Image (cartoon, rainbow, N blue to C red; front, side, top):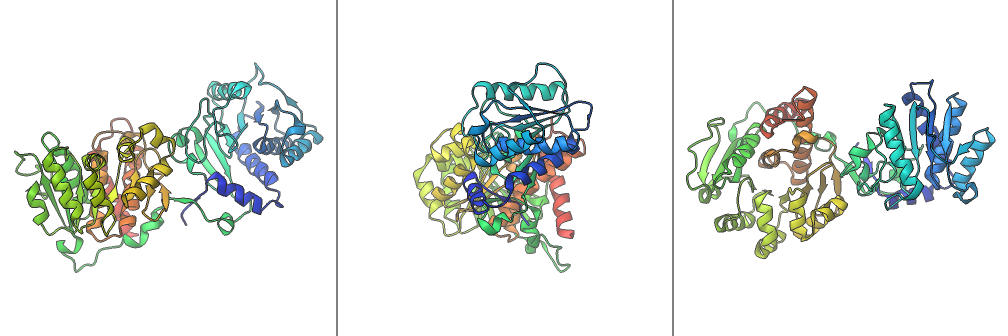
Length: 493
């Protein structure tokens, strides 16, 4: 079952519906259990930072339980116990009644086996200030100095749990235990850099029975029914014909990368329509690809079409794109095709008027052009940006980047967790286009093809890194064969 994702508003609703349950005690117990595993240097104490809200209450519960397990603890708390929210105040009292004490500042000396961040969690939507900002910076530095784990409770302090935007300063945790349900901000934008390993503690609740999930994490189970072994009685026509439109002068390689990916992910035929007026006669590395003049591509009997890899911004490119959008083919637009759509109102109208939604795969700068905004605004709330593009253009969207966000026309969204920094290199988007159009050509539903292509793309890059290829120096072309291997594993399973 796909991991459910909840925004803070939904989590508050779940908490309110379960107000009678001892949620803070359960959260502290879950935190203490993981802390017990992480604090391996028992000769050094655990440093616990407790904030002025309910996240501080979670920290007090964890501290009390760690003391019961004979861990030496140092709890730093600068607030007024009487000003804490009721549940947190009760947790603080239980800690004090058990003999626990607090100090008002992080000690200047001593080494730590573990640092626990219980400052703000979900409770901060702005940059930390004052002594709390100093504590965050100090905690990050101490974790590096002592090479000890830094465990964040619910969400690293300074990180927006809804969007993944990291304020400055922000806890850079090695581990995050998040409560009730997973939060989207832990998985996209700055989140993965600040959360480390994430575990979900549901606190003995069933969140989905109380409040529907806002989104989901992409899972291979989402599209498992579409990845099947091929019938023995097959021929190349059984698996569709993918078209790639692109390859303007000096950018033929982009179209070739997309075509190679489409071919190796199982499209029966792959046609490439090149805009270069002096195109190569064939792809010497992949002679199975069938090259056409750009105008002749649409005359092939295609079952899906990708436009954009190396397309350029010429008048010819614009006219060809208009023809492609007007077709009834399953359609993917990337790269220069997106830039043309962003700059030409007639293309926008045509795209939004299609009877079958197309797929758009922008990176943040391309998304900003589509929204007539800035890249910072897109990255500030990647989910909202993807949903807005989907609604405005009536298309399914994959907003690429750390934690690619997938949004559909009907308002559903997912976050993809596969992939790594080695993918930040030229040609990766072209390969993704080829993978997705291959699935479309083989008859996959549009939303399943989009999620599967994005997930597979990242999974292939991850496997390469695991095997020692990258992340530094990983190339787009290397991902293709590994994607084929993984896809065949799925189909065999």
